[in-house]
Image 1 (cartoon, rainbow over the protein chains, first blue to last red):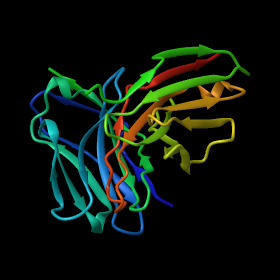
Image 2: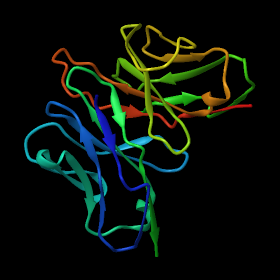
Image 3: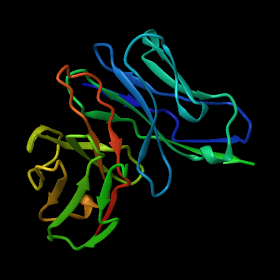
Image 4: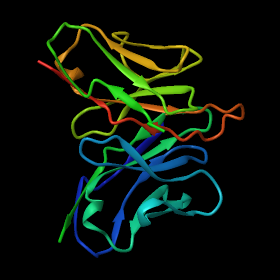
Length: 113
Length: 116
């Protein structure tokens, strides 16, 4: 069965520091992978997506993610975090023939000034 | 473009009652999916509607039902509410292509349902 694991429930970083949020997936074929961000009182906003091609994907707000098939991972990175990046981050996988998204449990990012 | 809109924003019900949540998709989108997000959890897929029919369904009981209208808007109905139904209900819209390609889903702000 398809699944997504986000090992870190809560991460705290200082503003300006680099960030890496981990995501591992379980899926037999080449997955479609997504990272979403959710701020309090808001819906989910798509940061970036991967379905084929270059394994390093650039997204909005300066985020990037790297697909590593050998490690079944799709980690999200940002070189310098801003206070406005504090939010909940969700990794998700989708199979080719469906629109159903399977989400991880999320990682809450806290940013200290 | 108003994006995906949902109503109401918040709702309080008691056990055993019934509730209807509404969603208007993003302009140009014809497919609506519903997700339940319990506190501290990731969203869980409930079902998806396309061409006014339920196309896919997640692991939710029959108490959860839906409808899609000719203008592509959608309703989620939950009967016989349980305390465990308290959650944020998210609607996502997308555009189905004939190739079945990767259709990005755009999410609404959600409806916060509290069952007492």
